[in-house]
Amino acid sequence: MKKRPSTPVVGALICAAMALAAGTLPAAAQQAARPQAETPNYCLEVKNTAARDMCSAARTQYYSGNYRVAQVTMKKAQEASPKEGIIHAMMARIMMRFGDRSGAERELRLARKNGAPDHAVLPLLFRVMVERREEINLLNEFPEPAPGAKGMTASDILQGRAQALFSLKRVDEAGAAMDRSLSLGRDPDGLLLRAKIATQQRNTGLATKLIDEAYRLNPKDGGVMLARLAQLEQTHDDAGMLAMADQMLKLYPFSSDARVGRIKVYLKRNQDAKAKAEIDAMLVRASVPVAIYYKAVLLARAHDKKGAAQTVQMLPPEFVKSYPEYAVQMAQIASDNGSVESSAAILGAALSVAPDLIDARLKLASLRLSQNSPQSALLVLSPAQDSKDPRVQKLLGEVRARIAKDRAF
Image (cartoon, rainbow, N blue to C red; front, side, top):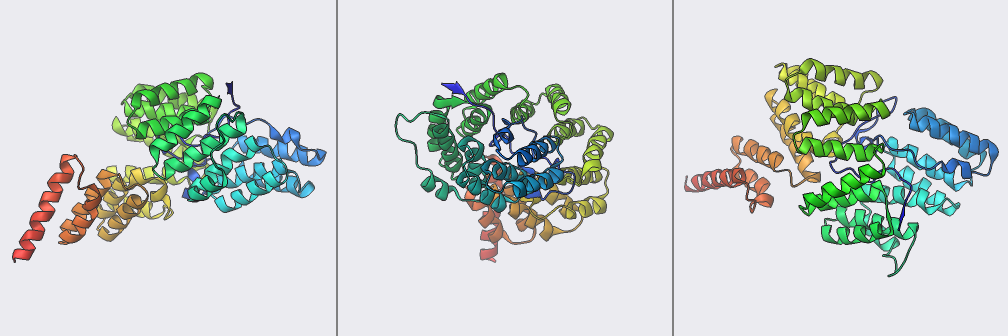
């Protein structure tokens, strides 16, 4: 069994996001814009000399965070040698930074058609297909490798299938596919995906072991460091979070995830001035949506209800779907400013992509109950009616009592 070269991380243990581009990225692109360990320099395989030089230059620009410049340079490389598959693969990687998933998939398929190595194409193609909700197409197009299949391509296909199965909530099947993939090759991407699956299986011990192994394999991999940061947050290790954030920023100076880690600690410690400095550091480079969100949080903490609500309105509509975990705070800001329906819309959008967010579901049901709409509140709570969370059962009791009272009246 061989260790594979690291590729951009398929998914971190906690869904966090950041923007590095020198300009405004759509929120949908933020999840792709994480610090990463550099991939092998496939540009060296480009046959055309001029195209090879431009591909390498674009790659350097890309890993420096200059994505717009990298896109222009890579386009010139394509024009110099349009049949070089690896250039199409590299262009797809850049396009993902700007949320252009359909364009990225087109480029990746051109890359395969024009001879790019599967390991340079398949991991990103699988991620794009899952993000475009093409899980069934992925499973049909890339069937499970035959028993006894070996090699990197078989491992990549199993990992891609695991992503699709996990996205379809077929968690145990995803775990089995990923276990087989890891038996063929272990790399940070695969280990983190298996850790994510283990978390859903409530096997936190396995998740921790897998992340630790990924860290031993590549302690400078951005995705691994991000997963470690998430672990430290889960265990409420504030000092550890700050230390890990410092390590990340030394390697990835534009890492918004690292700065968000600092912000969370500073807000917990009521060090709002330090949190503001981190937000400003992100906003100096670009209008990073997550920084705008935290700017609104700071304004709310300063009791500037109107300013906080206006700042939330600056966020792109898809932001809450990319960051459903922020929905409750966003909804509270809108509600505090009197925008009840805006608050409900935010919570509904979050639940459409993350139906298991109990806090968001409780808040939306409570809001509907406060609007004298107990039937709507019951509808919101129905998917969680079997939850053992005492808050759910308490609110369900109140809703049903209100319905009974209305009927009696």
